[in-house]
Amino acid sequence: MEKENLDKVLSMIKGIEKKNLEFNKYLSNLKILSRNSFLKEIISNILEKNKFFQRIQLNDNGICLAKEELKELSNGNYIEELISKIRNEPSKKIIILREYLSKLQGIAESDLNIILKSLTNKDLEELNKELLTLTKIFKIKDKK
Image (cartoon, rainbow, N blue to C red; front, side, top):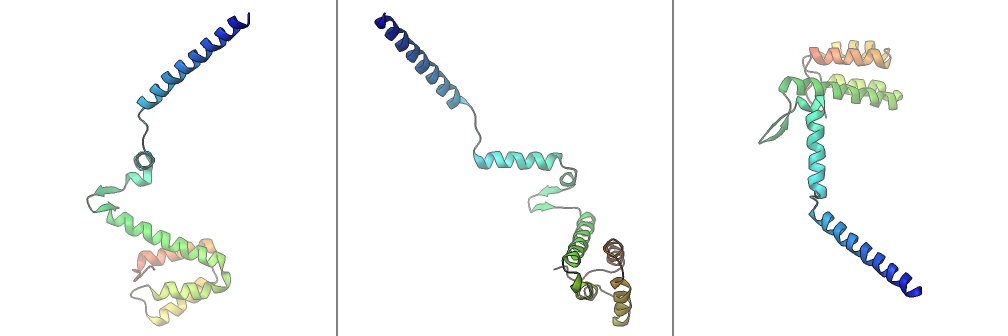
């Protein structure tokens, strides 16, 4: 009976080895993307399905937004960055606002002081609206 059990175990092992070979053959025939290819595919899916990225135009020079959207987007981001700086360091609110106002084109120094005084008493939400309005009225020299 021991011989029968041994033969049974050997046939089971051969069956497992055969299935293992079939499995290895199947896996070797699968088309598996490289890491970089997989990341490129994920990024292209994100670009195709995201509404913001659908507005992006691709050309030989790289990625660019329509000029108006880029200007509006960058001004909004700049203002959001200023508001977050003020939120993180409220003691430097006047310094941050003075720096922002100094970058606006076409405003006299006396007007800057008046605007600065009116902005210092605003809460962050009102300040955000006011800064966006000022950005729409006056051009910003340098956003860095």
